[in-house]
Each structure stands twice: as C-alpha cells, then as structure tokens.
Amino acid sequence: MSQIIVDTNLCKKDGVCVAVCPSGALTLGIDGFPEELQETLCILCGHCVAVCPNDALTHTGLPQEAFLPASKELPAPAVIDGFLNSRRSVREFKNQSVARETLEALLDVARRAPTASNSQKLHWIVVGGGEKVRALSAEAVNWMRESGTSSAMLEQWDSGYDFILRGAPTVVVACAPEDYGFGKQDCSIALTFLELAAEARGLGVCWAGYLTRVAAVHAPLRQALSVPEGYTVCGGLMLGEPKYKYRLVPPRKPLSVQWL
Ligand SMILES: Cc1cc2nc3c(=O)[nH]c(=O)nc-3n(C[C@H](O)[C@H](O)[C@H](O)COP(=O)(O)O)c2cc1C
Image (tube, rainbow, N blue to C red):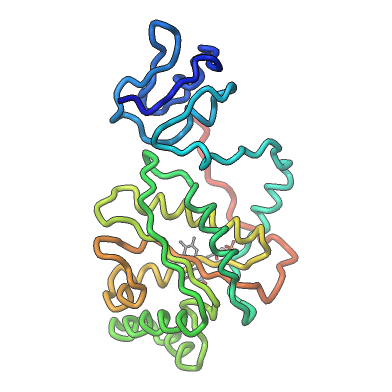
C-alpha cells in the first residue's frame, strides 16, 4: 500500500517530489500525479512532503504535525564562518550544571543530523553531574594504569586533575549498533551538530577522545556508561559553562588540497 497520499486538488503535477526522492521510490503516474513505486524503497526521509510547494503530499509513515517549518533566512556567510572559526575546545568549566531543557534541545538538533540512508540508529547517553563524570574518568584511568600509559598523565590524575574529562559537569556520548557500517560517521556528524548548537548557546565543548578510545577496549567503562548490549561507543563530548573566553582564532597548518 502506498505511503504517500496525494491531494489531487492541490497537486500541480510538477514532479518536484519525484525529482528529490533519494531512492527512486516515486514516479509520476499516467495521470501525472506522483505515486509510490515500491513501498520498501522509501527511506522515510520526508523530502517529498517537505519540498512540495503546494502542500499536496502527506506520508503515512511521517505524521504531518512532526514536520517543522524550514528556516527561511540564511545567516550571512561571514557570520557563520566567524562562528565556526571561533569555536574552541574548552577544557576549563564553571562548576555549574547544564540544564536538562538545554540538553534536550541540543539532542533534538543532533537527532536531525544526516545519517546514512536516513537510518537514525544512534543511541545517546547523557552523564550529568561532576561526580558521575569523574567516576567515568576514574574507570578510564584504571585501564590506563593497567595498560602502562604514560606516567605523566597518571601523575596529573593522582594530583587531582581529571585530564580525561577535564572536570566537565556533563558528558554526552553517542553510540551506534556494533554491526552498523556507518556508526562512526553518523555519530561524528551528530556530535558536531550538537557541539555547534551548544556553542551557539554559549556553552563550552570539548571532544572526549580518551573516553571514546578507552570505552572501546575496557568493558568496565562501558558498564559504567550503561552502554546497551550490541552498541558501541563512537564518540563523546564534554559540556559546560566555559570558564574563559578566547579572544583570538589560533593559526592552523596550511591547507593541503588538490584541485582536479
Ligand atoms: C576526535 C577528537 C578527540 C579529541 N579528544 C580530546 C580529549 O580527549 N581531550 C582534550 O582535551 N581534547 C580533545 N580533542 C580536542 C583537540 O585536541 C582539539 O580539537 C585540537 O587541539 C584543536 O583545538 P580547537 O578544537 O580549539 O581548534 C579532541 C578532538 C577531536 C576532534
């Protein structure tokens, strides 16, 4: 049964929905109206409904009320570029938790990030509260001690500095099913969306690389995170109110590029 419902009073037979369908699930029928070729081809991306200039389509798998109005105005490129270039990895946080509503808003942005074939397979773990975050770091440090990691870092920990999660009040971890081929990519993109949405709200963010690496090899850390069975930790972010403001954008290596 077709998942798309065409309002033939509104449809102008322009074929825009067919043109944007990424999986070739739609075609124009002999009457000129769009129709679904094969239900199984549809990846539920919602583009057909979202693009229709005449509001002529609905999709039975995607409730109409769940569509949001698309942003009409583009921010000036200089504003976006300046925002992106001024983003910094923040490693000093105020002792202040991130509000639940803020975290929910950030996750709502992250879940809309592109995923391969619109698979939307990610699972999120939010760790809130300095003590819980420090317990994760302690578990990562346990593994580092056992595996003979550089003593300089462990000395930092022993002297009270958390070099794993930097005293952040909140950590957000993205997981993907172990057997899913695009887990790393989907998680990195979603975390980047979350990072930028957090920075737009004045929060400080830093990628939690140590945590991610140790979670891959140390089951007690995965248990401390309550990673669901069959999922793997693909990345994480530390989040909190930044203690300091950066005044300059530091230089980076020259671009390495080939123009073909
Ligand atoms: C995948 C990834 C993992 C990272 N892991 C850590 C980490 O565990 N701890 C940390 O302090 N910074 C971490 N960083 C931050 C980098 O050190 C930082 O991006 C780099 O020094 C450039 O600084 P900038 O982000 O302010 O431009 C990580 C960054 C990425 C992209």
